Length: 303
Image 1 (cartoon, rainbow, N blue to C red):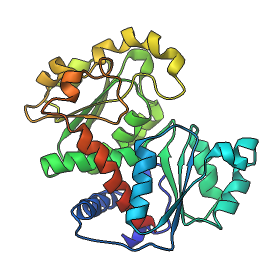
Image 2: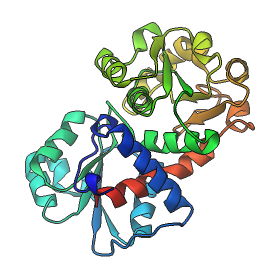
Image 3: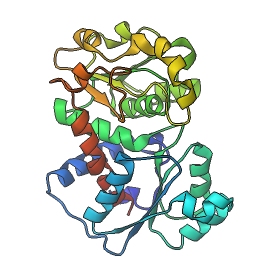
Image 4: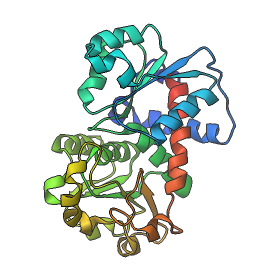
C-alpha cells in the first residue's frame, strides 16, 4: 500500500479501483488479526464540525489499535471557532500532526486543508461525500458475497453525500448502482456524470421509482431523510419520502440473498422499518463495525 502513503482522501474518486481492492483486502486482514502495524510515534487529529458517534469512535479506536495517538481538535475550544483562516490552521497542524481527519459541511474546506498542508487529509464526512463510510459498506458487501463485481446496490432516499459516494465507490469496483430519490431530491448531476464516466462494466441509474430500483438488487441501502443541518425540513420531507422507506415490501422485490444496510443513525419507522433493521437480512451492525477496520486500513496505508 506504499502508493497511498502521504496521500489525501477527499473523495473515493481519488482512488484507483485496484487501490480500493487493496484497502479492502488489508481491512479484512486487520479484522482477522493477520497483520499488525506499529505507529506509536504517529498522531491523528480529528477536526469535527459535525456531531459524530461512529466516525469519531472508530477513527479513535483504529489509531489506538495501530499504536498511535489521537487528539480531538474540537472547533469550539480551538481558534477555528474564532475565525482563524483555514489556511493558517492547516499550515500549523501540518507541523504537529501526521494525519488529519475532518468532518465538516463544505467540501471546499477539505480542499483548502489539503492545499496548505503536506500531511494526509481524510474526508470524515462533508455535505458532498462520505468516502470512509462507503469503504466500510463495500467491505460488508464483500464479506457477504465474496466479491463485488456484477452485484447491484440500490440506495433509497435523499440524493445526499451517501448517494454520491456510493455511486462513485460502486462504479470503481464494478458494481451496478441504482439511486431512487424523489424528483426534487436527486443526487448532484455532476456526481452522477462522474460516476457514469468511472463505470466501465457496470450501470449507474438514477430513478424516481423505488420498486423498480429494488428489483433483484443484492443490497438495499438507506439513510436518514433529513441530514445534519436539514432538521427544520424533517417533518415536511416525511410524506415525500414515504414511498422510499426500506421495508419488507421492497426487501421482497430484491434478490433472495439481499442484505439491508444503513449508515446510521437511523430513524426507525421513517426511512427504515424496525422489522428490516432487526431482521435476518440486516447487516447494519457488521457495517458499523467495519468502519473501524476500513479506516484502520486507510490510516495504515496513508501513514
